[in-house]
Figure 1 (cartoon, rainbow, N blue to C red):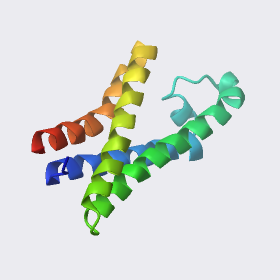
Figure 2: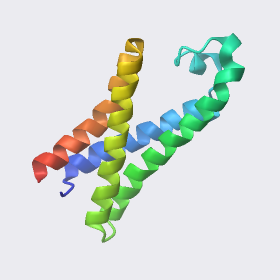
Figure 3: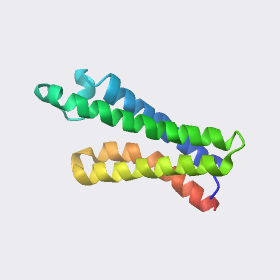
Length: 128
């Protein structure tokens, strides 16, 4: 499967979004406006923070996978790069589906999280 320009653009956007999510979950989570987005009450922050910190790194690694895969596509490793980027996007999409299925109130967040990796996967599939 190849990665056309459209798939690459959406993979990069998905990667950047997941790096942003990492920042929210692992760096800025203690801020009320941030942990509130995740529906975490102030009294639960101490218990939830370690989980959010860890989850943020999952998102960072997925984001870096998508970004690194696209870089590899452009540096002489198109097959490996496409595989890494698209696998990362598939994982992102899977996580978005699980988020939506677990808590319907998070459907908007799941849509934001899953739309760009889905677009990358569809574009790559259509390109063959």
